[in-house]
Image (tube, one colour):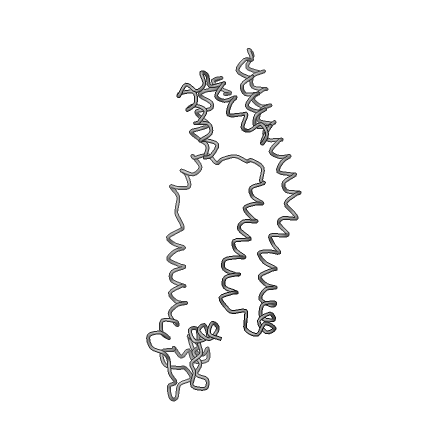
Length: 256
Protein backbone atom coordinates (compact mmCIF):
# COMPACT_ATOMS: atom_id res chain seq x y z
CA UNK A 1 0.00 0.00 0.00
CA UNK A 2 2.93 2.37 0.48
CA UNK A 3 4.28 1.84 -3.03
CA UNK A 4 1.10 1.02 -4.93
CA UNK A 5 -2.23 2.19 -3.56
CA UNK A 6 -4.27 -0.86 -4.57
CA UNK A 7 -6.48 -2.64 -2.03
CA UNK A 8 -6.92 -5.85 -4.03
CA UNK A 9 -3.18 -6.35 -4.51
CA UNK A 10 -2.53 -5.57 -0.85
CA UNK A 11 -5.02 -8.19 0.38
CA UNK A 12 -3.74 -10.72 -2.14
CA UNK A 13 -0.13 -10.13 -1.08
CA UNK A 14 -1.07 -10.53 2.61
CA UNK A 15 -3.02 -13.73 1.90
CA UNK A 16 0.00 -15.24 0.13
CA UNK A 17 2.61 -14.36 2.74
CA UNK A 18 0.96 -14.93 6.13
CA UNK A 19 -0.01 -18.15 7.80
CA UNK A 20 -3.47 -19.58 8.44
CA UNK A 21 -6.11 -18.94 9.68
CA UNK A 22 -5.93 -15.25 8.73
CA UNK A 23 -4.65 -16.08 5.25
CA UNK A 24 -7.70 -18.29 4.67
CA UNK A 25 -9.98 -15.44 5.74
CA UNK A 26 -8.33 -13.08 3.27
CA UNK A 27 -8.70 -15.64 0.49
CA UNK A 28 -12.37 -15.99 1.41
CA UNK A 29 -12.75 -12.27 0.64
CA UNK A 30 -11.58 -12.90 -2.92
CA UNK A 31 -13.70 -16.03 -3.16
CA UNK A 32 -16.89 -14.14 -2.28
CA UNK A 33 -16.09 -11.55 -4.92
CA UNK A 34 -15.22 -14.09 -7.62
CA UNK A 35 -18.37 -16.11 -6.97
CA UNK A 36 -20.46 -12.92 -7.45
CA UNK A 37 -21.62 -12.84 -3.85
CA UNK A 38 -20.30 -9.27 -3.71
CA UNK A 39 -19.62 -7.00 -6.65
CA UNK A 40 -16.50 -5.26 -5.27
CA UNK A 41 -13.59 -6.14 -3.00
CA UNK A 42 -14.67 -3.38 -0.61
CA UNK A 43 -18.12 -4.90 -0.07
CA UNK A 44 -16.62 -8.32 0.52
CA UNK A 45 -14.09 -6.85 2.95
CA UNK A 46 -16.74 -4.89 4.86
CA UNK A 47 -18.82 -8.06 5.24
CA UNK A 48 -15.78 -9.92 6.58
CA UNK A 49 -14.93 -7.15 9.05
CA UNK A 50 -18.38 -7.39 10.64
CA UNK A 51 -17.37 -10.73 12.14
CA UNK A 52 -14.43 -9.01 13.88
CA UNK A 53 -16.30 -5.98 15.21
CA UNK A 54 -17.32 -7.48 18.56
CA UNK A 55 -14.06 -9.36 19.02
CA UNK A 56 -11.31 -6.99 17.90
CA UNK A 57 -12.47 -3.47 17.11
CA UNK A 58 -8.89 -2.27 16.53
CA UNK A 59 -8.53 -4.68 13.61
CA UNK A 60 -11.66 -3.26 11.98
CA UNK A 61 -10.56 0.34 12.58
CA UNK A 62 -7.15 -0.34 11.03
CA UNK A 63 -8.74 -1.77 7.89
CA UNK A 64 -11.04 1.23 7.60
CA UNK A 65 -8.06 3.56 7.85
CA UNK A 66 -6.35 1.60 5.08
CA UNK A 67 -9.47 1.91 2.95
CA UNK A 68 -9.68 5.65 3.58
CA UNK A 69 -6.06 6.10 2.49
CA UNK A 70 -7.15 5.15 -1.04
CA UNK A 71 -9.10 8.40 -1.33
CA UNK A 72 -6.34 10.74 -0.15
CA UNK A 73 -4.94 12.93 -2.95
CA UNK A 74 -1.53 13.56 -1.38
CA UNK A 75 1.05 10.88 -0.68
CA UNK A 76 2.02 12.36 2.67
CA UNK A 77 -1.55 12.18 3.95
CA UNK A 78 -1.92 8.65 2.59
CA UNK A 79 1.25 7.48 4.33
CA UNK A 80 0.11 9.12 7.57
CA UNK A 81 -3.13 7.12 7.48
CA UNK A 82 -1.22 3.88 6.86
CA UNK A 83 1.05 4.64 9.81
CA UNK A 84 -2.01 5.46 11.90
CA UNK A 85 -3.64 2.14 11.01
CA UNK A 86 -0.51 0.30 12.09
CA UNK A 87 -0.29 2.17 15.40
CA UNK A 88 -3.99 1.54 16.14
CA UNK A 89 -3.70 -2.24 15.79
CA UNK A 90 -0.40 -2.37 17.71
CA UNK A 91 -1.63 -0.23 20.59
CA UNK A 92 -4.89 -2.14 20.80
CA UNK A 93 -3.11 -5.50 20.88
CA UNK A 94 -0.65 -4.15 23.45
CA UNK A 95 -3.45 -3.01 25.77
CA UNK A 96 -5.23 -6.33 25.49
CA UNK A 97 -2.04 -8.23 26.21
CA UNK A 98 -1.47 -6.12 29.34
CA UNK A 99 -4.94 -6.92 30.65
CA UNK A 100 -4.48 -10.59 29.73
CA UNK A 101 -1.15 -10.74 31.58
CA UNK A 102 -2.73 -9.20 34.67
CA UNK A 103 -5.72 -11.54 34.64
CA UNK A 104 -3.69 -14.70 33.99
CA UNK A 105 -1.87 -14.73 37.33
CA UNK A 106 -4.62 -16.53 39.25
CA UNK A 107 -5.34 -19.16 36.52
CA UNK A 108 -1.62 -19.92 36.20
CA UNK A 109 -1.40 -20.44 39.96
CA UNK A 110 -4.38 -22.80 39.78
CA UNK A 111 -2.78 -24.65 36.87
CA UNK A 112 0.45 -25.00 38.85
CA UNK A 113 -1.43 -26.38 41.85
CA UNK A 114 -3.37 -28.80 39.66
CA UNK A 115 -0.42 -30.04 37.61
CA UNK A 116 2.44 -30.01 40.12
CA UNK A 117 1.33 -29.70 43.75
CA UNK A 118 -1.71 -31.99 43.57
CA UNK A 119 0.19 -35.00 42.10
CA UNK A 120 2.88 -34.66 44.77
CA UNK A 121 0.29 -34.47 47.54
CA UNK A 122 -1.48 -37.45 46.01
CA UNK A 123 1.65 -39.56 46.44
CA UNK A 124 1.40 -38.88 50.18
CA UNK A 125 -2.38 -39.08 50.57
CA UNK A 126 -3.15 -42.20 48.53
CA UNK A 127 -0.94 -44.58 50.57
CA UNK A 128 -2.68 -43.33 53.73
CA UNK A 129 -6.07 -43.88 52.13
CA UNK A 130 -4.98 -47.35 51.09
CA UNK A 131 -4.06 -48.15 54.68
CA UNK A 132 -7.37 -46.86 56.08
CA UNK A 133 -9.52 -48.43 53.36
CA UNK A 134 -7.77 -51.80 53.75
CA UNK A 135 -6.65 -52.38 50.19
CA UNK A 136 -9.59 -50.83 48.36
CA UNK A 137 -7.21 -48.46 46.55
CA UNK A 138 -5.37 -50.50 43.91
CA UNK A 139 -2.46 -49.62 41.67
CA UNK A 140 -4.70 -49.30 38.61
CA UNK A 141 -6.71 -46.62 40.41
CA UNK A 142 -3.56 -44.55 40.76
CA UNK A 143 -2.56 -45.30 37.17
CA UNK A 144 -5.95 -44.14 35.90
CA UNK A 145 -5.86 -40.92 37.94
CA UNK A 146 -2.24 -39.98 37.22
CA UNK A 147 -2.10 -41.06 33.56
CA UNK A 148 -5.57 -40.08 32.33
CA UNK A 149 -7.59 -37.88 34.71
CA UNK A 150 -4.91 -35.41 35.84
CA UNK A 151 -3.28 -34.90 32.39
CA UNK A 152 -6.72 -34.42 30.83
CA UNK A 153 -7.73 -31.86 33.46
CA UNK A 154 -4.46 -29.94 33.09
CA UNK A 155 -4.75 -29.96 29.29
CA UNK A 156 -8.36 -28.70 29.28
CA UNK A 157 -7.62 -26.00 31.86
CA UNK A 158 -4.46 -24.89 30.02
CA UNK A 159 -6.25 -24.70 26.67
CA UNK A 160 -8.99 -22.67 28.34
CA UNK A 161 -6.38 -20.16 29.50
CA UNK A 162 -4.81 -19.96 26.03
CA UNK A 163 -8.20 -19.50 24.38
CA UNK A 164 -8.57 -16.16 26.17
CA UNK A 165 -5.29 -14.88 24.75
CA UNK A 166 -5.72 -11.74 22.61
CA UNK A 167 -5.37 -12.03 18.85
CA UNK A 168 -1.79 -11.89 17.63
CA UNK A 169 -0.51 -12.43 14.12
CA UNK A 170 0.50 -15.28 11.83
CA UNK A 171 4.10 -15.95 10.95
CA UNK A 172 5.30 -15.31 7.46
CA UNK A 173 5.67 -18.36 5.21
CA UNK A 174 9.04 -17.03 4.10
CA UNK A 175 10.39 -17.59 7.62
CA UNK A 176 9.12 -21.19 7.62
CA UNK A 177 10.74 -21.91 4.25
CA UNK A 178 14.10 -20.63 5.54
CA UNK A 179 13.97 -22.94 8.56
CA UNK A 180 12.91 -25.89 6.41
CA UNK A 181 16.14 -25.62 4.44
CA UNK A 182 18.17 -25.78 7.64
CA UNK A 183 19.27 -28.75 9.70
CA UNK A 184 16.43 -30.84 11.09
CA UNK A 185 17.46 -32.14 14.54
CA UNK A 186 14.60 -34.65 14.77
CA UNK A 187 16.49 -37.70 13.53
CA UNK A 188 19.57 -36.91 15.61
CA UNK A 189 17.43 -36.62 18.75
CA UNK A 190 15.57 -39.79 17.76
CA UNK A 191 18.78 -41.82 17.46
CA UNK A 192 20.16 -40.51 20.76
CA UNK A 193 16.88 -41.24 22.57
CA UNK A 194 16.67 -44.71 21.00
CA UNK A 195 20.22 -45.48 22.15
CA UNK A 196 19.44 -44.65 25.79
CA UNK A 197 16.08 -46.44 25.65
CA UNK A 198 17.77 -49.61 24.41
CA UNK A 199 20.32 -49.37 27.22
CA UNK A 200 17.51 -48.87 29.76
CA UNK A 201 15.55 -51.89 28.48
CA UNK A 202 18.58 -54.17 28.25
CA UNK A 203 18.40 -55.38 31.91
CA UNK A 204 14.69 -56.16 31.47
CA UNK A 205 15.43 -58.25 28.39
CA UNK A 206 18.12 -60.15 30.27
CA UNK A 207 15.67 -60.94 33.08
CA UNK A 208 13.12 -62.27 30.62
CA UNK A 209 15.44 -64.37 28.44
CA UNK A 210 17.84 -65.70 31.04
CA UNK A 211 17.19 -64.77 34.70
CA UNK A 212 20.45 -64.17 36.58
CA UNK A 213 21.60 -66.55 39.27
CA UNK A 214 24.31 -66.60 41.92
CA UNK A 215 27.88 -67.40 40.84
CA UNK A 216 30.41 -68.84 43.29
CA UNK A 217 33.33 -66.52 43.96
CA UNK A 218 31.76 -63.56 42.23
CA UNK A 219 30.13 -60.51 43.79
CA UNK A 220 27.83 -60.15 40.79
CA UNK A 221 25.19 -62.52 39.51
CA UNK A 222 25.31 -64.23 36.17
CA UNK A 223 24.51 -62.07 33.12
CA UNK A 224 25.85 -59.07 35.03
CA UNK A 225 29.12 -57.21 34.47
CA UNK A 226 31.61 -56.89 37.33
CA UNK A 227 33.12 -53.39 37.40
CA UNK A 228 35.39 -54.04 40.37
CA UNK A 229 35.24 -51.28 42.98
CA UNK A 230 32.42 -49.61 41.08
CA UNK A 231 30.16 -52.60 41.70
CA UNK A 232 27.96 -54.45 39.25
CA UNK A 233 26.81 -52.85 36.05
CA UNK A 234 23.11 -53.82 36.22
CA UNK A 235 22.95 -54.19 39.99
CA UNK A 236 21.09 -57.52 40.26
CA UNK A 237 20.90 -58.70 43.88
CA UNK A 238 20.24 -62.23 45.20
CA UNK A 239 18.44 -62.03 48.55
CA UNK A 240 16.74 -65.02 50.22
CA UNK A 241 16.73 -67.04 46.99
CA UNK A 242 15.05 -64.18 45.11
CA UNK A 243 16.58 -61.98 42.44
CA UNK A 244 16.07 -58.24 42.81
CA UNK A 245 16.74 -55.81 40.03
CA UNK A 246 14.92 -53.69 37.44
CA UNK A 247 12.34 -56.27 36.32
CA UNK A 248 11.79 -58.10 39.65
CA UNK A 249 11.31 -54.80 41.48
CA UNK A 250 8.93 -53.61 38.78
CA UNK A 251 6.96 -56.86 39.05
CA UNK A 252 6.75 -56.74 42.84
CA UNK A 253 5.65 -53.10 42.77
CA UNK A 254 2.46 -53.95 40.87
CA UNK A 255 1.82 -57.37 42.37
CA UNK A 256 1.86 -56.17 45.97
